[in-house]
Length: 371
Image 1 (cartoon, helix red, strand yellow):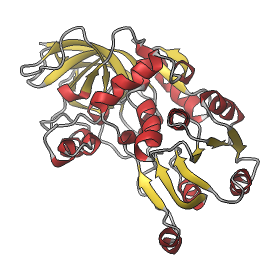
Image 2 (cartoon, helix red, strand yellow):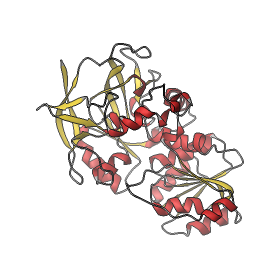
Image 3 (cartoon, helix red, strand yellow):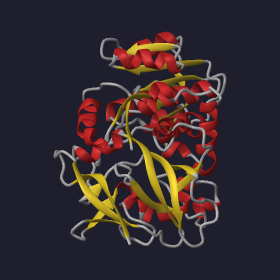
Image 4 (cartoon, helix red, strand yellow):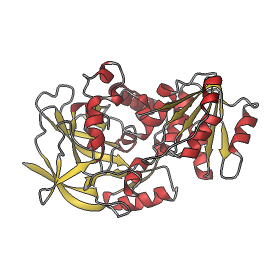
């Protein structure tokens, strides 16, 4: 038996997504859960695929930032049951490999082998077209559709009183941004933090730095609208680097010292290099922005060793979704972080291409699909 539902399907770069009928097995395989999606964020990572900056197989149901309700569970599933509210994780860990056992589940071997290739843990696709052809699921999720079949560890139970639209964003932007500051950079109260880029990830990196008690948080972007949002999320200083000299303003604000932490949340070579170049001695630059395939950067290794600088990557905010998702939802429900202001537009699935158009024009923070 199968479930038939609508999904937004990617077929080729620079083409509009098409709303198509697709199917999933109605009975989850062992170790998997069937989730009825209630909301999905529209993320810049999906745009990378749409415009051809990331090469992926097709056809594919895009979307990787979702929340919903468990419809049924497969044999052997013990941590979830029908009716649980969940946020989906695009790093469903195996909980057995050296990375999972070592406390770094986002680097899980199974994720690298299968989810990163947009397949389930058995190396197969779960979604099919009405003609019977396989359809890939972005990051093994495919949240631009009304249902998803995911491994047990890919659906994290959350409290039932949290709204779905806000909870969905914990599945990517919130965890990635907050985690980049708290987990990867390990911001301390004495730190001055620079965040480059005030989109969904950048604004959450600002929230993360605020949660960690950073002494000063400098936000940089070329959009005045996004800079004003950055102030709402906790930035103490704003730099419009489309009109101001970024390096000069950072040096001015830090008495020529530079910043202890710089978080790059755009994914461009020049801003990654700027994050590194604006560090104080002993500082750390974190790359949280997702770059296009094949991008390279240039840094001075002598300065790195001489000044003990660090340049590190942050995948999914170096998070542990099992514990971090519920914690972030609790932070939101207790008014410690702001998720409401992230949701600037709630849309129907049929409006997905318009959401990408607005993203490319820099309008708003997050469009969220409501099912």
